[in-house]
Image (cartoon, rainbow, N blue to C red; front, side):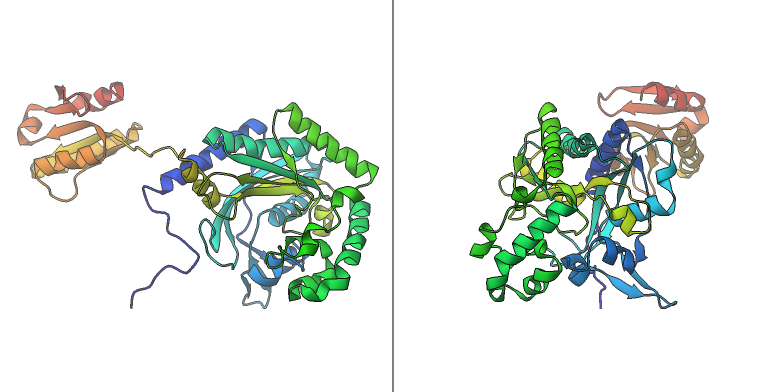
Length: 422
């Protein structure tokens, strides 16, 4: 019986992994410009972290987490998202005491959710995200959004739509919560079991229900924007103004609530409008989470961030046809003919590589013609031909595989010759 890959996971093979490396490097380069520094957290955390931060009423906690008990009878969970772990690390390591504030971080790594696999969605997926913790300036909200938009722009995506909303402060949210309960309660029996449960625990989650999204009460539900107090409205207006100043287009959608409980004030998603991208158009989501640091045991520090799936990003790049083709080449391929030449090629290959050049030799005992074909398949710039006669004369033929030109070079000068011709 053959063992196959678990459902909802994927192997990223050579030829494909280079796309990932290109995107990941682009994300790291942009973070460097914005002064966000990398943080790496464990793949699993105590289950309580996600229950307290993501929220007991969310689909993630109720249905999608990979939770297990270790040998010490502790409940642990593979991280379903990145923010909670970063905030936990921020609080535990007292990063709020650093001299440079706000603390600006980014992460890149695998996340795990037990959900139905579909195009661009996996049970193990790679997430890139940024967090800015310690400032409640609306300008940092705009910066975080601009970073995400800049990444997409530099990768070549054009058919994007930035959607904004404000979830308000705690007072605004309470007033909106009461209005939602009054709106849905008379007909809550028409909704799914999850929505009936959320009516009293977190009615805002009803607006995020996928099963009942077409119910008539959804479109007529009270808008959070009608319940924003002056402070929350002013905050949202400043975020919008900063985006306009940066010439970043957006639309306001009062039904945007996001799928996590820790959001307040600014919430946003970036969608792809590319033809053929699929029914689920969200590429990136994020927002402000004032109070989350305190929820995980730290001081009361504000924060904002976003996360995006690399898998979804690759799908969007493919839909718009802007994913750059991968062309890999090597500096030199050693074609060794005869046993002595093959022995000589081993330390020579190491010497070439130590000088920073990429090089390869034949390991399959192939004839000269087949070795040349191997060099061409690897898109080698030069072929270094060494046989018994060349060894006796202390020279080798170096062929430029782009031009076809060939030179005879003393063996002791081979490395220098290749460096000059790089």
